[in-house]
Image (cartoon, rainbow, N blue to C red):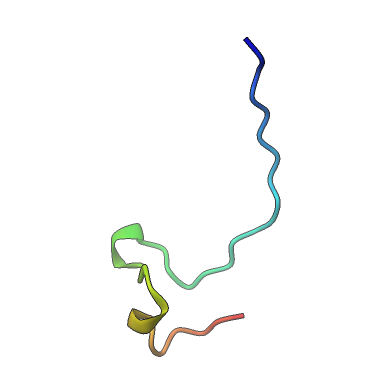
Length: 35
């Protein structure tokens, strides 16, 4: 079986530190700074 290799493609910069409080759609992210 072939092995799977993961390579990072970037860094996530977010003001959100708790997954359950992170908006999943832009419409719910009003007031959040974006890049």
